[in-house]
Image: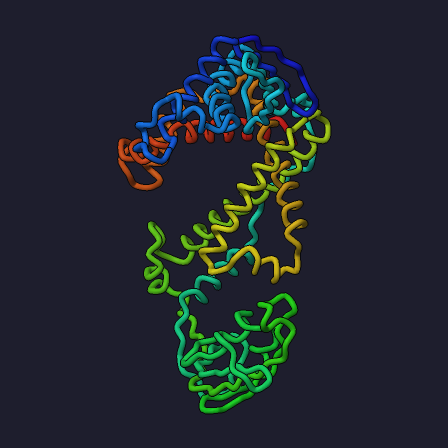
Length: 424
């Protein structure tokens, strides 16, 4: 095979392959024989039609397509090897010359993004030091009390934060609609679980009372209800209020936090937890600024096919997550009032940013010669085993099918740590 290469714009390479005449003729002959076996002619059983007769019933264009497709994988593989090309998307394939004796094909190969890094060390972007105040610690402990609160019956009127137990029937223009009714439904007032305005109208209600709630469905709602006025007839059975547990040793013991036996220990535990969360948040925010600064001072060329593929993967992932919540993409777009075109534009912008950041890291890793050794992997196994109270061998077994991805993620983390160390 004769193979020639031509560099194109935006990380594309044109590869022209001229197939040897003998190989092309052999492929055509093999295709004829293969297709002849499936020819059906009246008076003959399938597969037993004489070859001379069968050949007359073969579509020449179908035979040529089959012969070409039989040669493409080998031609593409040989072209990649000769040009030392690493493809990053499916190639575009065209037949540029075709006859009984000649076959030439052209592959447009999408190659790796080209990265020319600018400054990536010594940047001063205002790295923040995370701090936790005494008030934040006390608020976190108060939240713990709320999470462990019990509901008790209340004699008086419902207030924000109370829970009402009720039956309700929803209607639009006097007609009930699907999903608009429930019995013994528990609703926390102020939770924002229902249509805007619904919960506010139940504040002040008492057990045993009936109350009509008038609301207007948002414009970004299911089409059959969007923008319509609705009436919910509510019969309240009970009003419950939260009773917070006392902040004492018994409460702390019931939390079952390892090594936490008194209030001071609980405060230290919460402070460490909040500090870790803040550090992670600050780190994420700073890395975003760092990536943006490096990208701004660098030349990074990314093929559009890679961006489109990544955006499609992001869309599928989002659709799967929505499906678990009983929502479709179409419904989501209706709720947000966003067109699919704008939605995809946002995904493509995010995809481009993600790919850019990834290849910035890859380039820095290459320049700084940052790799992950077998000893590094073993050390990480030990940390995971300790964290999840597992045996090291069990951790290895659990991660065996994802070993290469695991090792790759360790390398990416190491490169990020190098970035954080060398910038302020």
